[in-house]
Image 1 (cartoon, rainbow, N blue to C red):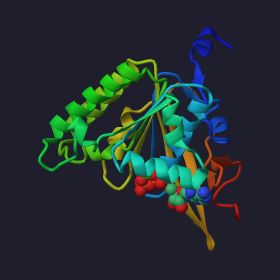
Image 2: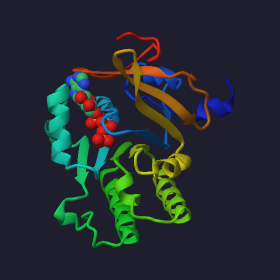
Image 3: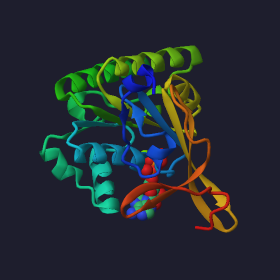
Length: 245
Ligand SMILES: Nc1ncnc2c1ncn2[C@@H]1O[C@H](COP(=O)(O)OP(=O)(O)OP(=O)(O)O)[C@@H](O)[C@H]1O
Ligand SMILES: [Mg+2]
C-alpha cells in the first residue's frame, strides 16, 4: 500500500453489500450523489447512511427539501423502525426542513431561483458551523436547481455548492431525481455517483444499483440487486438480470 492510499480515509455507508461495491466506503470529505427515478430508494439509502452514522456515535445533519422532515421521519419509523424523533433528542442527528416558515426559505414561485440557492447555501453553512456534523444528507437537490434555465449557470452553481461542502470535515450524500434533466450536471460535479433503478426480469420487478463513477478508486463494475426489507437496504451479490427473486 502506498502513502497516497493511506491518506484517503473511508467512511462506511452502513449498507451491507454496497460498501463492498465501493471497496470499503466513501472517501472522507467528499460529495456523493445517489440518483434514480421516483420510488427507487434514494431517501431510504440516505436515511440509512445517517442511521448508521448515529449508531457509530457520529453527528449527522439531514436537510430535507422534497417533502417535510416530519413525513420523512414518520416513513422511516413505519418502514424500518428507525426512530429519528427519539434520536434527534439525543442531539446526534438534526433535521432541517427548508419549508419551515421560520427559515423564510420556502420554495415559492415568487422567490428568484438564484436567491433561493444563495439562501440555501447560507443556511447549509450556518447549520454545519452550528452542528459540526461528520455526515450530511441532502434529500433532494433538484428542487433547488429546476428553475435555472442555463446549463452554464447550473454547472457553476452545482460546482460552487459542492466546493463549499468539501471545505468542511464532512462526508455528504445528495439525492437527485432523474426525470428533471438536472441530474447529469449534478452528477458531473460529484465525487461519486450511484444510480438506483428498476429492472424487469420476466414477470419480476427487481430493484437495481450500480456505481457510475467513483473518483480516486476502482469499484465493482457490476449492476447488482438492491433489496429493501423491514431491516432497510442491502445490496445482494446478484445481477438483477439473472436473479429470480
Ligand atoms: N419495509 C419495507 N420493505 C420493503 N420495501 C419497503 C419498505 N419500506 C419502504 N419500502 C419501499 O421503499 C420505497 C421507498 O423508496 P424511497 O422513498 O427511498 O424512494 P425515492 O427514490 O426517495 O423516491 P422519490 O424520488 O419519490 O422521493 C417504496 O417504494 C417502498 O415501497
Ligand atoms: Mg425520496
